[in-house]
Length: 120
Image 1: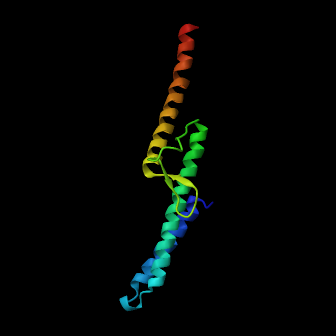
Image 2: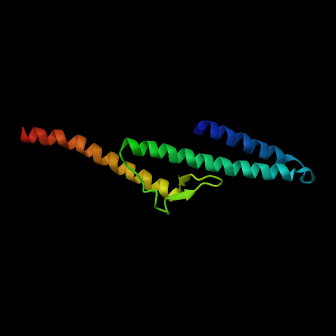
Image 3: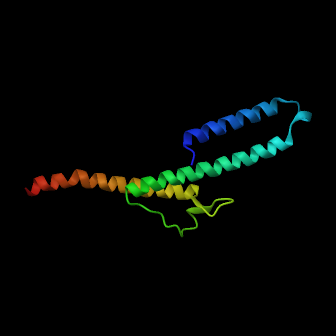
């Protein structure tokens, strides 16, 4: 799987090529190139979505947080694949769960020594 940085570079190069193509006079615009570029951008979006999903799953494992794979609102099908990736709403919900778990762990880490001092 490509890193986010390489995906960003690929996206930047694609947009630069689109800009070059749009600078040409309208009669010379290559519609085959336009169709290929659109397909490439769609593929990039899918790859970025999979990368974000993978990153969140790693963070979730670190904090023992999971999102149910059966939740249709949170998971969407990946075109031309049997994989599932988090939707925008799913990523937001997953981040919220991770943040809540981080806060809970922080509170426990802060308050446990205080209780020990009070009881000790």
